[in-house]
Image (tube, rainbow, N blue to C red; front, side, top):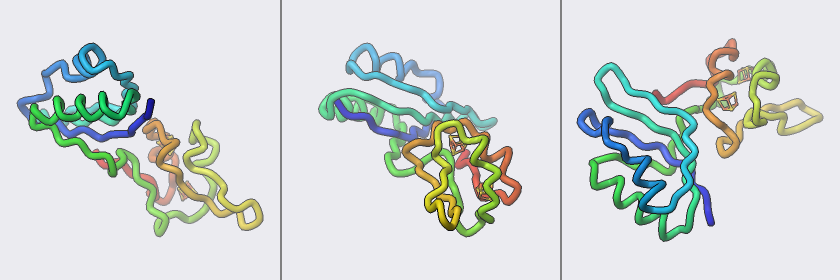
Length: 136
Ligand code: SF4
Ligand code: SF4
């Protein structure tokens, strides 16, 4: 069993389809949705973890792509900009998973581990320097 973090983009006409239901029922996948959004233009974004065998995940993603849904394995819904980060530490008490963390105890340098981010968006609300942002 493996788990993959994916960002799915649904074009306007595909947001109503029960795609996640079929991933669970027909492809034996465990789906953990972190964030879903439909824009005013009725395009949809979904950030999720999918757990299953590599073969089932591959078959599931083939199915998803038949709906003109874009599957992006590289992008995350939340982004941390190292250049904008002033290392103030304000986000540390707000981040529930340790995705924003102290990398070096001596220098108190802060870093970001996207694999731990659950897209709660608390850092975006609480970063005074706009170092954290959302892709959608
Ligand atoms: S979105 Fe939430 S989990 Fe992710 S880095 Fe920000 S506070 Fe942490
Ligand atoms: S609150 Fe923003 S500027 Fe401060 S350490 Fe966190 S990400 Fe960097």
